[in-house]
Structure formats: C-alpha cells, structure tokens
View (cartoon, rainbow, N blue to C red):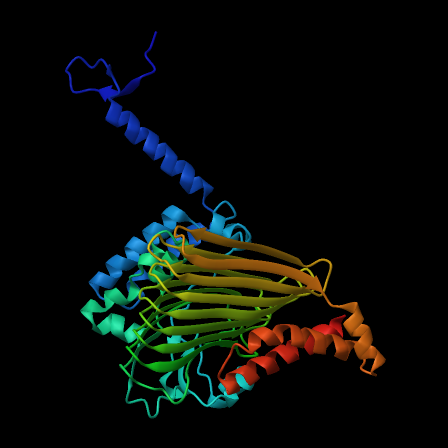
Length: 482
C-alpha cells in the first residue's frame, strides 16, 4: 500500500527504479502555503486583479527615484495582500467597496486635454468667486497655466510629481504610518502621480485661502490618484480649500483617490475645507490624515453633493496639549447615491477639546453612513469631546447607518455622542404653506435651514456663501423631482 505522505521522485540512483521518501515538515508547509496563495488568487475580484496587474505595466512610468519605486512596490504588495475593503472589515461595514467596485478604470497618466481658464471658472461655479490662491490639477496632473500663486512669500509650493522625480529624499512624502493596514492608502501610494506639496512658514498669516482644485476633464473613464502633503508652521494661520469639480464633457464614469496629509504646528490655526461635486456617478475616495500640535486650533468642513459614491475618511490625532478641533460637514444625496463619513479622533494627550457635527439630506434610494470613533488614551485626562450626526430623510426608501463610538481609557473626561434621523416636519410645512409659500419652495427652505447649522461652521464668508449656493441649486433640483 502506497504511503500518502510522499514528496517527490529520487531518480539520482542508477537502478532506474523510482524511490519515494516521506515529505518533510518544511516541505508540507511550503506546499500548504502555495495552495493557500493559489486559493487567495482565485478569490481575487476582477478589479483587484486589474489594479495589481496594471501596476506592473505602468509602474516604471510613474514619477520617482529608486527609493520611491521601492516604496510603490511595497505598497502594491500590501494592497494585493489586503484586497479591496469589504463589509467584514468593521470600518467598511456599510460601504462594501469590493462589491461596488466591479471594474477598475485605467489610471490617469497625464492631463487628457488642455483646459481653458473660462472652462475652469464654469466648472467651479460659485467657488470661482472665492478670492484665493490656486493650485490646479487636471486629471491628476499639475496645470501651471491655470494656477495662481501671487503674493505668497510665506508659502512654499511644489508639485508632488516633480518633487518625486528630482529629490532622492522625496520618498518621505509618500510614507504614511496610518496607512499600514489601509488598503486604499496603500493603493494611493502605489499609483499616485501628482499633488500639492505645501509648506507654510512659522507665524505666517495667509490673507487669502489656498485653493487646491482637482478638475476632471477626460472624456475617457479614468482612475485618478493624487496626494497632498501640507505643513503649517508654528503660530501660522491659514485657510485651505480642496475643490473637486468636473467639466461638462468629462466621462460619466470616474474613480478617484485623494489623500491629504496635514501637519498643524504648535499654536497654529487652520481652517481646512473640502467641496466635492460631480455628475452623480463618480466614485470618490478621500483620506485626510491630520496631526495637531500643542495649543493649536484645527477646523475642518466637508461638503459633498451629487457624487455617486463618496467615502470621506478623517484621521485626526492630537500631538500636543491644550488644542482644539472642530470637524463638521454637510452632504446631499439622492437617487442611489452613497455618502460615507468615517472619522477617528485620537486624544493621545491631555486637556484637548474635540467637536464633531455632520448633517445629511437623503432622497430617493440614497444611503448615508456616519462612523465616528473618539479614542481617549490613558494619559489624556481633562479631555472634552462631543459628537453629533443628524440626517433629514426626504424619502421612505433612503437609508441612514450611524455608528458613533467612544473608547475611553481615562477617568477625568467629559465625552458624549448622539445621532438622529428625521422627516420634514409637516407642521412647519403647513405653516409655510399657510403663509402663501408654495410647497416645493417651502420644502427647500426647511431643508436649507436644517443643513444651515452645519454650513455656519464655515467661517470664511465667501466659501460659506459658495457652498450655500451649491446646496440651494441641489435642493431646487431635488424638489423639482418630487
């Protein structure tokens, strides 16, 4: 009877008779590992396989020195191991990207076409009225002719692609400790081609906002990867606005991954804003990784409207005592659009204050997700943290999933969280109609007043008015569909 525990033929003898010998333990482990690897490869989705295979084709053409190339290869290997996030990963429970992302679009390599200044102004809409310094990226590539950086002596600006190509130490711009187990940050590291590298000097006071504009222009579907690295010096004050827009002729299908790493120096004050609009079918993945120094104030606001699937992820860590952060946002979704806000606030040091307020409006069969985790470390005494997520449901078919979390390991803290979802108040609607206001207009007024509390968090008047105008346009269009 033949022993099943056999390995290979030993035909080194001169008899011509096959001799069989037992498989060693290391050999059995190697075979088992090979089988597991084969099974894992078989389970990879078409999108996951395409993202890995495409890197082999385009990796050599991406900007960067040998050190950057090695970092990219490590990152794509990490992504291959992790795969696209899915519902069994707790932080992606409500946004199953593996199921949603059926096809991975080819990565953008350069701007597909030239964009005129008038086209840019039209795409920005109300944001074009904001008096700001501009850094413009078209299909992920820096567009110097559309950028405007006048009067910025206290501002050092460079394009990430050029930095990666010319500076041997630029690999540090792509290193993110927070991305070790984040598949999408790893994917961004592997494929990123350009972005903004910004340094704001100590004690600098920017009199105008810095607007980093990402424009979709290509008529061909693309996956755009960008990365911003921003450092704000001690005692500096700045307003930074990231705008994401699409030209009328841009492809209906699009995918993007935008990462911003921001370091806020001691005693600095930063207003960090994001405004994302599109054609209702785009997939946008946004990651902010923020470090806040001692005695600093960091205020963040994110506005999202008319995006097919948006995942806005914020990781904010206190690195110095006596600091304050205020994270807020407003999002509008209809049809089958999906907006996911996932944030982690890490109170790693004592005596810091955090506030979070996010408001959403959901119509049709849209879905809103809010996941907010506040971590209070053992030494972070005197922590004050509060969090609130609220949604207005315009349709019985809409869905809101909320998962606020508190992980408290200190005993001298004041922390709380809340979440609510409501319909339009019929009494208020009746009141408006009794005063002669048509029903559609009354609904718009009530919804606008609901998200107004969040929009009031935007302290820069021009930016607040632009976002309010975008929200009003969306609300009028939504009301017309009812």
